Structure formats: structure tokens, C-alpha cells
Image (cartoon, rainbow, N blue to C red; front, side, top):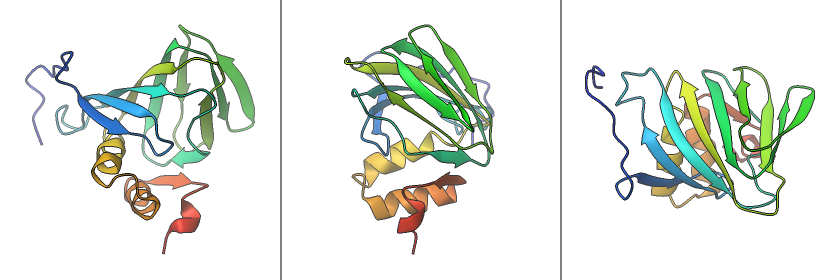
Length: 153
């Protein structure tokens, strides 16, 4: 792990491309390994009607900024829409989900603290998104996912 004494640079054309469990393209900008565990950072590009299954993070707080499209978030018992420019902070240990409710490709910038969750996207890309692999990756990263939990052996 680095000691985070050097700049982390994600330049156009040199980003790390990955996938989310729901198939969205993810561009990784910084990882926990590069920030000494402080945070992870990425952008997600979500097709209309798509988003992750309801899930709970047991380790990290997530911060999203909607860049394009409108997303519908659920956090616990609360549901709200987030148009471009909206910043949403989701606490750990609270079941949540979101989906792109617009008719265009959605884009969100995201940060997790502490870092580490961004590794999910890189590992999904490496395993070609096999559902049985996703469940074990999520479990190892402390994610409780309503859809993949049933797939765990």
C-alpha cells in the first residue's frame, strides 16, 4: 500500500475501465491502494432504468454527485430524485439503492471513504461479471446485496 505522498492522476485516455454489477461502465480515478486507504474515486455511466440492487455497505460512506441524467435514490425508508448538480451522501449500515430514471445516459462522480469498495468494479471486470463471482467479491468487501446474497454458496 502506498503512503499517499504522491499525486494520484487519472488523465483522459489513461483511466482504468471497469464494470458495476448492474453492467454500468465505471471509470476508476483513485483506489485505496493509491490513497493509503483514505478513499476511492470513480465515475459511473448508467443506462436509463438501470442501477444497483438494494444493498448495504458495512464499511464505507458513499458520496455521489450527479453530472448527467436524473437518479432516484432510496436510503432506508426515504426516496428522492437527484437531478444534475445534486450531491448525495449515503451512510454505512443503511440499505440503499439508486437508478437512472432519465431517458439519457446518466453519469455520477463517486467517492467512498474509507477506500476499498472501488475494487469491486475492477474485480467484476476481471471476472467478466460472473454472478457467482460478484456475490463472493461483495461478501469479502462487506457488501450485503439483496440480489446476490442468495447466490452465495
